[in-house]
Image (tube, rainbow, N blue to C red; front, side, top):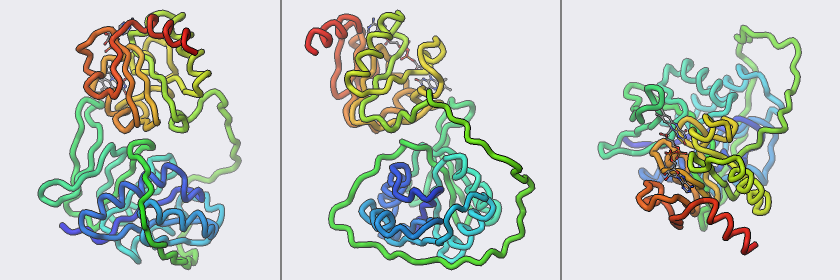
Length: 324
Ligand SMILES: Cc1cc2nc3c(=O)[nH]c(=O)nc-3n(C[C@H](O)[C@H](O)[C@H](O)COP(=O)(O)OP(=O)(O)OC[C@H]3O[C@@H](n4cnc5c(N)ncnc54)[C@H](O)[C@@H]3O)c2cc1C
């Protein structure tokens, strides 16, 4: 099949957030396969600079509905449906945020379209079809999914799966204003009577960090963990972990990296005592430089590492502390 247009849907007024830029970069690489166009659908204020910035990452056309503060998911979905109906892209990529997932689900029923949630990759296969990949069967397999009878193929993609990249010599993109009259009946069966923001200061977004220190089962002692934590502060790194490190209580589940955790793409990832199981590697593969410290020279993580250190973690920490 030929793809004419791929749409990326913004889920907030932060049109050029790193997350949306990651999705646009991926859409661009898929669109280049057929020389097709990338549309970005936005709802919110007309912020020319932010919108133009999207062209540097591969957007050809921006469609903006100038309606600030649309928080009603039904209205937001109605606007996006109208945009998609008018431009009829072959594929639409949504962020897998809570709001993005809700919109994608509503749109899939409006268009009776196939929706693959939480994709970890999107590829054109050798038959020229679009394949979406996601973990399935309790995360034990990676499923390849194709939407055969959908006019439009929908997917949501987790943050950090793709890496944003600026393209050289991009022309400025077209920005089209999208007029919207409220025509929909309020279908929302839920009425919000009051809302309160819950702040959880302890949880941080691990994708914000350029350096990630990741601990695995090899970090057996609390004292070793503390040394890694102290070191992370000196380098401005975040400390994350494998599923084992979460199960052993060293790391909060929010900081788990891998198939059933988060995907990261920092400039530098340092794995301390991590074997390199495929379920972990899938979450780190887009890192800039992978440094692995493991005492077993045959540890699978070394196959992916740019810098392999065969040593005991505490010995390496001693050396680093001596240097700094
Ligand atoms: C459905 C499913 C989903 C999963 N999802 C995830 C996920 O999201 N994230 C994830 O990480 N895993 C996930 N897993 C688990 C995954 O399969 C591995 O079990 C896990 O990643 C292993 O963690 P680890 O590397 O910390 O431990 P291990 O595999 O036990 O490796 C520990 C390593 O530390 C080294 N070591 C030991 N002592 C030292 C020392 N003193 N100095 C240096 N090196 C040392 C050892 O040589 C060993 O290689 C999932 C599994 C399943 C089945």
